[in-house]
Image (cartoon, rainbow, N blue to C red; front, side, top):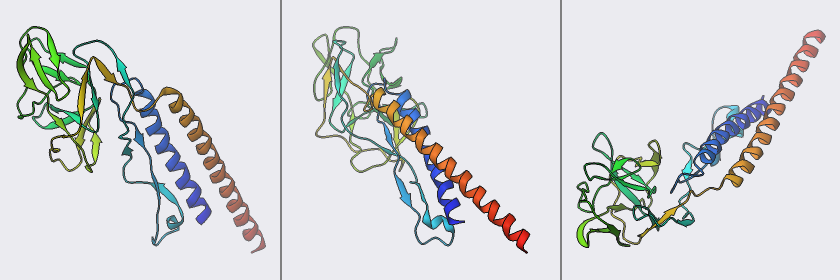
Length: 236
């Protein structure tokens, strides 16, 4: 029976990998998107045949590699260079994080990132007056050559981030991330997604081949076991 468990585990792993790969591919054009990486782990010292199988890890990990920068010339576009995330406020008053630097200003003057209000370095929301906007490398904003606010940047360090819809992420612990110290913003640029479409398509094709192989193994083992049971029954 161990072979059947191993093959079935392979099917489950490939299905989860396909779901993650599809998500990565669908967001290949999302600025600052962090692609997911599926890690497999072996189940050891378990009192069942599953101890021989490789199963998906508890949660996929985010690839924190820096994405390529693309110049847009838009003064409301900023690319994060470094490990930091832009701090934003969620609808329930909590805090989330994004690398999507396509900023916008609401009719009321509130600065938005990924559709959520941007949190300033001091913890409040940023409201801007009308006029030309300049954003410095440290996140300082000037409007009409007058200092206005400073964009809050947080560093995930060793924290685990979970997706929260769109291009938002939250700390798995529920705590706020510490302020970033070594990252910068580049006005007029956007950070592109960490995964490119070509690689995404190749990954999906590879996963589909692995899934088909695992399914074929399940069918083959099941048929062999059924044949063995029939032979044993006839002999008995």
